[in-house]
Length: 340
Ligand SMILES: Cc1cc2nc3c(=O)[nH]c(=O)nc-3n(C[C@H](O)[C@H](O)[C@H](O)COP(=O)(O)OP(=O)(O)OC[C@H]3O[C@@H](n4cnc5c(N)ncnc54)[C@H](O)[C@@H]3O)c2cc1C
Image (cartoon, rainbow, N blue to C red):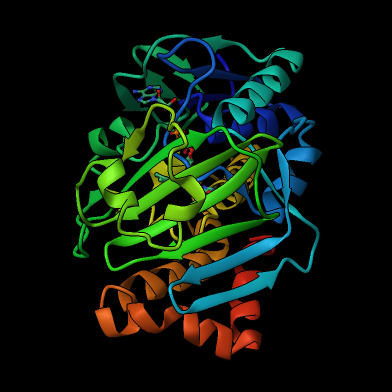
């Protein structure tokens, strides 16, 4: 029986498996989908994520990111990362690189879903097969979280994300967040001839229609063909607990606040590392405390920003305020960029 089974072969399931193999655990991944998987994502890796993926031997292509720039019709505010650059990496390139690292480590990936989970005293039965522990990294709408009764209700307004690519040379080394009354548009450089455009909004409208609400983007993107659009949401997902017996929730499966601050992968990597350390120590329960420790600061900042900017007067003043208070904007960006 493997020491650890991982449900989900997305970026954070694969990273969990790499941490586990590095800790000497016998690990197997279950992922129903074959090949490289694409998903709606802003594709900006925070400096902490870049550093962590490098320690796991994951080779990242893409484009360097120097910081975050907020843009609206009134002007611009920007903050540079103080601890090294981040990286814009197409989701398929990130997943492909993780798959290669997992294959190089000799970790088996079985292409079938996790369907049933039964807790036993000294193991967990997954679809009738024994494993020491199960990490559920099965995404925003985690079936394992739901089946174990760990779903919690969210009371905040629902928001959704959409993303496409545009074949054009990036005009900046920053991730640009453009603000409009309808939502936010993220521009991430992901290669020398390609940018990612991610839209976040509480409005469920077609991508083009939402894009037209950003006057600061029109002149940049007018007439350029957009790739296929991918969507995700509702973004806010909550779990009641992160540990149930021998099952631990990691990444979006453990809960997600919003894509507005772009640290999902960095945070998930810190969670994956903590979950594996708890399993390796034979003390899965301690992950609950460790999860809170690595997650609270990001959750608080993201939640505060999402809640405040739901109100139009705050929303229209966010870029001027960030420009007028560069020290505070810089501190907030670098809080999110530093290791969890
Ligand atoms: C619009 C948008 C923009 C974002 N921008 C950024 C950004 O710029 N930077 C950043 O760091 N983060 C960003 N994020 C967040 C980031 O995309 C997520 O945090 C990250 O993808 C979570 O990875 P994961 O491995 O937990 O989940 P996923 O990538 O969703 O992987 C889950 C996997 O589980 C599999 N699965 C499902 N059910 C089962 C089952 N029963 N058994 C086994 N496997 C199963 C699925 O097939 C899937 O492959 C953004 C998110 C959105 C929606």
